[in-house]
Length: 265
Length: 305
Image (cartoon, rainbow over all chains, first blue to last red):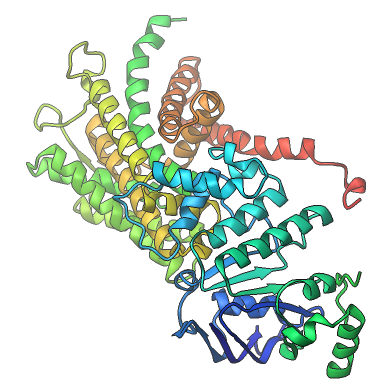
């Protein structure tokens, strides 16, 4: 479903702020894979997700989604295949637009937007109401409220719903619970798992929480200095503990895991 | 004090406000919907005026002249849009560059002359300040209300369509818009074109209303447009919440602006000082949200706790 073929990216090459973010990163996902990504500060986790979504062009390598080579495509065109949820709850939704308008925008992802069709129809609203109801946040009764009025957790849950409203080939989750309080984070993670299972989605989830990384998904990868250094499959993963992960990391990278936000508990 | 003199000036202020209200609706599209401050309008409004003046004095129908002014305005917006998106120049600077270039273009349009008269008695025009105190249908206020109303309805419909919603999303959150597959660069260009088309259209009406086009006629237009947008929001924002209602606010804001200007002139302010007054008023209104933010923010020592 996703082939990241030996990609590399250096930011600000030849300057004092030069930063090699990805060096020969290689990753291949089967349909239905739910992969969690962990790694230290600056390991290239978010950069790899952004490379897939086309936020910047990569220096070398190629990215293939469901058989389509998207390496040269601009960000907005790749959106056809991707559902994305960001770390900052403000990023995934348009604050000045209403809940239903945001959902209508997401519902048309990958379609030509016509100046001769209404941006939202009465029929869709019913669908949105049903979808919102599954969040259990009461948003289905506030569909014409501006998204800016919602809390961070509510916005993140909405973004997640929007990312899956039109089934994506690949769901990209970039530390999407990092800015939430533990209780809300757990709720959003639970919802994530539910949506992925219901829609049979292929997903990549960056997390700083080792326990979540073990608990969710069927595969864990570890990144270090812009490379994938450990890839643990379903069978091995189920018997792993956090300590094993840490040991594995230190053994492979020859360095201690230095993520200042890493939660070990 | 001569109240009759003030009272007599009101119809003129209202019709002028209506013309500038159309211009301000153009500004609203960039400033509020796209979240871009576009300074092209100082040039494109005069371009619209120049196009209308030359066409009407050459014997063309005034309706055709305002339509052509709209088309030329689209082109002006396209230039700014390409400066910004294809050449990576910041939006404000792109607008300033186009505005400067349009000064030469406007002189070219008017055959190298700084102004062109459009005599109401010689040519047929849509609106004229000469009839502003008329009680009949030839009073420009009626036609201007109809034109503003039609424009507001059309824009309300457009921004409710799929593409219109995509443009609003582009202005609200570019990252989100791109993640939903919206071409934000193209959208920005479309918005700038639409905005400048409307601004040039209003310039064409202004030329007919005042009976001449002048290369300097729109100097500081962006500030008047912003004043109208902000005054409309502050005074009527609580009453009108729908999209069309917000556009009405803009139009009403422009009318209030001109009424206030008439009053301060009547009170004895020197005409030469008007632009300074406008700039100060806009500066203060723009500062209000910032000051409100300062008042509600917790003290520095408490932050991060």
